[in-house]
Image (cartoon, rainbow over the protein chains, first blue to last red):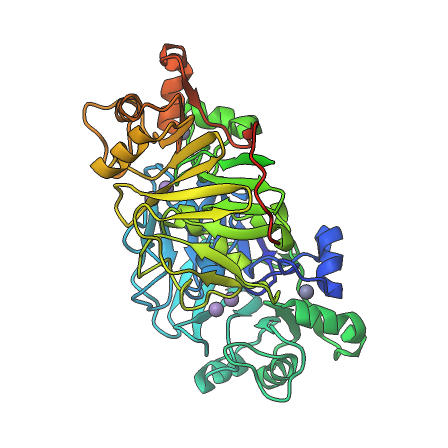
Length: 263
Length: 263
Ligand SMILES: [Mn+2]
Ligand SMILES: [Mn+2]
Ligand SMILES: [Mn+2]
Ligand SMILES: [Mn+2]
Ligand SMILES: [Zn+2]
Ligand SMILES: [Zn+2]
């Protein structure tokens, strides 16, 4: 059993943006299905839950302590780690391992007071690790601080979850080209721009990266209200195979190879 | 019109604590009225809302952008500022002033990317400022980083909101003794201890400070699950005049002197 749940598909501001009266934000205010919280995943297996980023601040209400086996961080921006500040004060004896890029600052006082979290030695580029039910490879990205995307695979299935990034390093692109990626989930914070924005992809860049990657499907994530407004009128013009992520979206992976569960 | 709303009455872990099966946490899981989020206030006047601390992460859903006139921070620990990380990305033209102690680090990258917030020159001890409907005085406290409590007064009414602290500096105590305080809202994170805990009050210390302060009533806040468990069996033994804060509690202040509202 491998299920990948999209906890959030939004950028740091989310949708609705506080105080905004644009069409996307107004719709999201009345229709919860159109809201976007911080981009993040929950990977569900028979073993339990692996959180990929922790920008949501209601994780304690969504996931029991016992169910959460580990956290996998893409980077230490607040919209990706904020939820840990509350969870860390759990007084359970079991520690929860946190996997991460090599960022000596971390976020605020999280390294100083990790509480229940146990920060693991940082991943090096292309490090891979096998957990019960799936395998992960750390792929370097291009962002304002040390950031990894993660290749999540199980048997025949492979998802590349790549946010936050502006383009790809050459080695990441060639890694993707050698690997049959079914679903490329990609930072696409902005609508098409004349030039690529700093630190994030616009739609032109995202489509370009997808075409070069050879991935079967593209899923846009880390979406801003600006992209949602643009999509309102232009989603129909997206190429075949391009999809828009939504909070709550669930991938149930078929044909899963059962691995030994050593817990 | 002056209303003081307790948005939260909990310590950094809150109640329930993630994974905890103690009596206080189990009750809070089933009864929302027993939950405690990060200690914080909303002061409502005819002008709008003044937030005292911003540890809640759903402030955008609770308060419209237009209603929030300013934020008053006691200190830069995450359980008191966390909510600002999301709100800052508002794209409204009006900036929201943030008043604060002199803490050059702030929290994570909040000073670097303040977004819609405008950090004001820090308060000095005993600085006072008058806003439409009430007056505030910054009272130095004793905590692991630069921290102010705030005296909130209007005409005949006065509340001293003092968290986080372990005891009081002598000058703060004598200031309180010279001032007729109706409601002393005080950090009481822990049940009675042999000696005062670091950075926060236990109940013995809180009762002692209250008696020395001369305040009419005492309200315990910044409460941990340990204190809630203790109170379950011992609340009846609290001295007359001592009360336990609750999330959502509302003080509607009578006899308010109308000030000119210049907005
Ligand atoms: Mn981000
Ligand atoms: Mn980022
Ligand atoms: Mn605190
Ligand atoms: Mn504190
Ligand atoms: Zn908007
Ligand atoms: Zn508990």
